[in-house]
Amino acid sequence: MKYFILSNNPIVRENFEQVYFVKVSVKELLIKVRNLVHKGHELITHPLPASMKIMSSPFRSIVLSKDKQQRVDAFQVEVIEESIFKLRYHIQQQSIDNDNDDDYQMLDYRLLRSALESSNKIAL
Image (cartoon, rainbow, N blue to C red; front, side):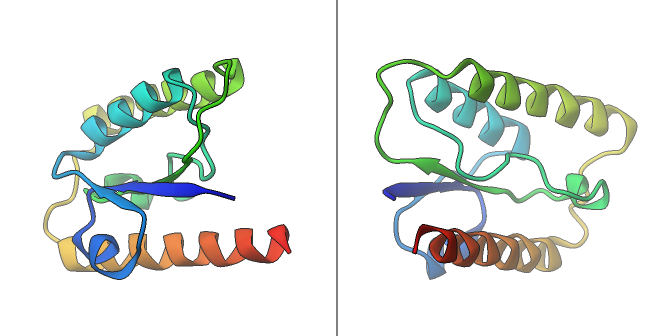
């Protein structure tokens, strides 16, 4: 499967190929992902973390299909739009935690690495 990673995490930029690094907030990163989904790219990893605590992370890496689909997938659009809504709500309730950047960078890197390793096993 051809993919690329959209990330605002410097550790991901240094350790993976196929990374499009953007120095933006998590909210802005999700908006960029939304724009790519509207252009026909598909989400390979979910844009939100599995844990509410990790929602406070200022770093996120999302895997998307490199190839564009002919038609925009309505479900993919719904997933990214809902993710942006949930992130905005979370930020209103509890702000982004910038005090633990190193830890959040490493956590995002490890979660991404695990997701890619799992997807490679499934693809075999």
